[in-house]
Image (cartoon, rainbow, N blue to C red; front, side, top):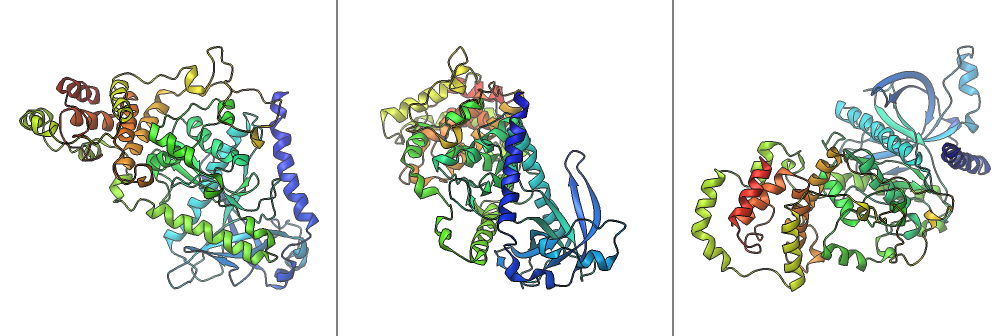
Length: 526
């Protein structure tokens, strides 16, 4: 049956990882972890279906000194036996099988003076790390149900508590993974929540999965920070429409950063993922990328004999990215909050009555139109004109949005020089189009609005030689407005009325005043 395809792929992936571990014997044998005294631990297991936690007790042996550390966490080698059977004596269980016990990595949040953090905030962060892993695996399962050329797995994680230590600290724990994938590449960061995308063409699966998670969740989730060995992933960040997943959850703004660099390809066509529209300048900039410039794979680590060196390098990269999650934009906290009515009015500069503002702007219209227009070419002017027309029509998702013919048949992408290695299975059947629901459209509108704001803030100076990329701002505001995003409609209404908006102060002098159009945008936002 078609449903049997995904399971063998998944089992094969796990079997290969287990076989590798057995073939290597114990890769941590030289560290003599079995000689370390055992400690009692309480496991905290998360159940995503019920969003609840359960506990059990077992024992582990864990090193006292970290083998790797980042800016926020220290990383410890650990061995853990299975939960002890009721018939086993303590002596028998403590002494049996430690040399063959499974290898785990325990990550501890640290205080500024490099002590294990036992605070409630640290425990909450540990729980959030575990929830993120399960949330990511939830969407990975849905991804695998489409029978993609490559199945993916997020490593199972849980929290452990040391009840006999002072402060009873909590650590997030997961199985240790090592080695290389079928391409001979070790640990790789494929994308981040702050816009980085690894464009190495033989690994499009992680990027397509991130885009898939957005549309499969109706725009409420996007799994980012995809990193790991092969198709075994770890330490993800989930972006949400309501900012529920901790400091690293940049919400629709983080989603905008991902789609700004995401390249639609034949693989995403195969899964029925609609194309995310980008402006001419954005597409031109994407075409300039060289794969090697944006790939963070550890090819240089192949010569490293010590796993200490490679592990420390990888773990430090994870923690550095966690810090970037908090400071990627260096903007006030309010900039990342959901678009409530007051926040929308504040960001659109709607401090006074719209009609009074329009009447005031009439007095300044001649002066405003006398300002130099920022367009640099006829193409820019045309794109702004077309964008303003698009903003007045409702967004449509027809066969062209999915790079398909009217019959539903996939179109060939002539821009792809060679067939992607992730897309080589000949028996893969194209999935039905993921047609956006009303919820998806609402969240897409937020993403386009945030991308317009990012352009207005100068987030992508490399695209416009230091100038404000007005066509791209208007492009994404228009797409957001066509998706009936209130903030975008209000911003366009103010621009058409000759008023300033916090999206960018340069828009008023680049867009012709049209009070009828302004009124229509204000009416749409009601």
